Image 1 (cartoon, rainbow, N blue to C red):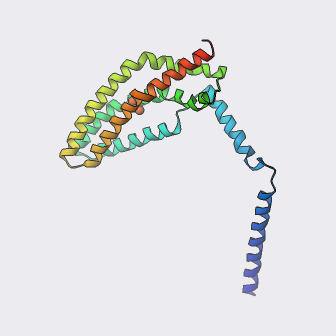
Image 2 (image 1 turned 90 degrees about the vertical axis):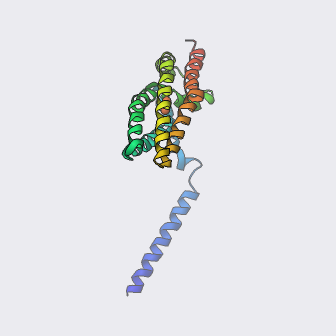
Image 3 (image 1 turned 180 degrees about the vertical axis):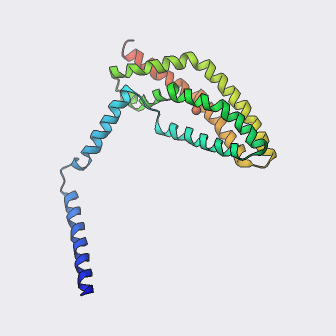
Length: 197
Ligand SMILES: [Fe+2]
Ligand SMILES: [Fe+2]
């Protein structure tokens, strides 16, 4: 009796799987992906009105934040040096996430040749970045100086993971100076040209 019930359950599962496979197989082309494509289109439309920081950059910032918090907790001279970095870095990240990085969320659309009037809203950010750029670079300079001290303290205390962290954060700042900030400014300049602003 017990094995009979088991057998029926197995047959029911097998039938269900076969029906599911047949359903997917005979769906009209694209039907299975229509909803996600529509959702994607919505996201892209929303992005033109209020651009968001590309996920990869957002995650990088979060990771750096988490590692710095760990360095602060490491204690000793390393912890004290990390605390100074944190005080300089936090307001800087806030500014970046407010107006320096969101314009980069439009890059893939612009590369596809898509420019819409709604994109004009981003000019407020890119113009602000242009004005604030010297101050942002000065902040980078101060952060890098603090990171050099963190690196030296970590080296001395043999907390090598924070030596690597300091290098990583310095590289992050350099990448912003050489690539990301200029790219964000160019996003604004390109949109101005295309919309005749
Ligand atoms: Fe940053
Ligand atoms: Fe930065």
